[in-house]
Image (tube, rainbow, N blue to C red; front, side, top):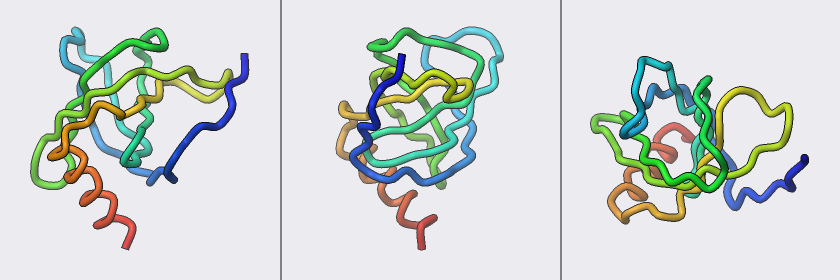
Length: 105
């Protein structure tokens, strides 16, 4: 099944280790792109579309809690999942935007 592109902002390519609250095991996870409204997590772990999760990632000097909802991915788009970040608290949104701005200059 194919899903139409729905990104509201361009994503910055990144390589940031992250973890998911409540996930067990030692599965490697990395953010590989990031925007103020979404990100992609490169991992072998899967979650059904619509699942609410909280990622934790070191963005700059501090760890940021990034809550979101797993969104459907197009077939063949690689290992991992995308997250819609519509539930961000203002402080997390500001940290993400500052991180993106610092790396986009």
